[in-house]
Image (cartoon, rainbow, N blue to C red; front, side):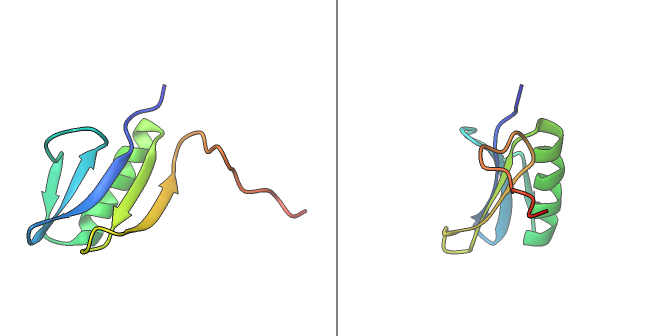
Length: 76
């Protein structure tokens, strides 16, 4: 079973890590890098995706730590 995708989004002057569909942030951080590190660990544990946003809300990062529907193909 896979968990909820983890979103790193701007939250005022901070960065929020929030599971998809959750009303409240799981945790708030002062630095985006700290929020990404935390969300990456959660996504790995839950076999889900990490989705990051810029300050303006535009998605700029997507990493899958679960069953990727489009896995990379080896060139060998």
